[in-house]
Amino acid sequence: MIESLNEIKKMRRIGVLTSGGDAPGMNAAIRAVVRTCMANDVKAVGIHNGYQGLINSDVVELDARSVNRITGEGGTILYTARCEEFKTPEGLQRGVQSCKYLGIDGLVTIGGDGTFRGAQSLANAGINTVAIPGTIDNDIACTSYTIGFDTAANTAIDAVDKLADTMRSHQRTSVVEVMGRHAGHLALYIGISVGATAILVPESKLDFEKDVIEKIREGRYNNKNHFIIIVAEGVGDTMGIADRLYKETGIETRVTTLGHVQRGGRPTARDRAMASRMGHYAVELLLKGGTNRVVCYRESKVTDLDINEALAMHKGLDEYTFRVASEIGI
Ligand code: F6P
Image (tube, rainbow, N blue to C red):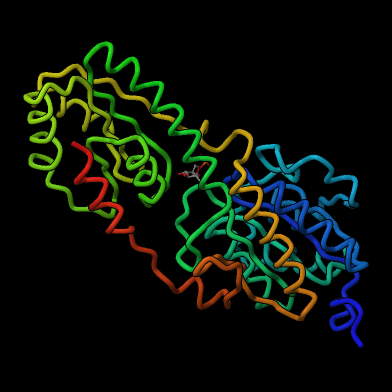
């Protein structure tokens, strides 16, 4: 009888790294990876600064106590980086050599799209690798959820609620730029949650005159005294949008860019729980012999997919949510 999963694969050492933009909840995922390793008699090693640290063999031995009380901390205890060198054949080779030199039998990488591509390259080069989606943008097609999204959305909602108080007092329009890189998932979620008058996202073809300007004029006519417009950073030219709104409606307008504040803060329960489950799942997957896989959340279950398949998918905006937000944002 098999007593532990590790009897199948005989892994001795599993590495974990976080890469790309940090996301609240990454620490809970690291903790889950380490503790699941301990439960299966596998040593855990943390790699600093993402793929850059892998290239430089910049590592730290982790035990159950080193990940004590980190689930509630924002950021990542392993630090992170965006590493251009790793995208080159030489950089990848150095990463592969590091894994061999450090005796890493399996690797868990936590991050967004770029992190997945790094994991794919490592797996193709023979390193057992499993990736976990961690990005506030929630822009990874194979999964309906990415670690950090919920906390970032809640941080932004809290900020916009505060802005709404002062906008109401001055009877102004607030144009709020939120993160999301090239996608509007975060903007849409924030926009519907704060009751925005309009949400501008790269994926949608809003008629600015009809769906934004006219809506504001009509709202003003019906005694609405302030307006919140959420703009995803991927739309670009937020200042230009605000100028146009002011010129065409005559209502004083202020721009707020929330920026990196959205990436910080204590992770929400949803991020902590999801990250813990995904971290645990990733290690079990490696122990069962899985490689070149991504952990994902689909149909309310933590599951996994082939990385190549995952990276070939395309994620569109949730059109129903967009329609709801537009119809009720008056
Ligand atoms: O991918 C996460 C993210 O915060 C994006 O929303 C944003 O476009 C980008 O990272 C910012 O990157 P950096 O922290 O490198 O400026």
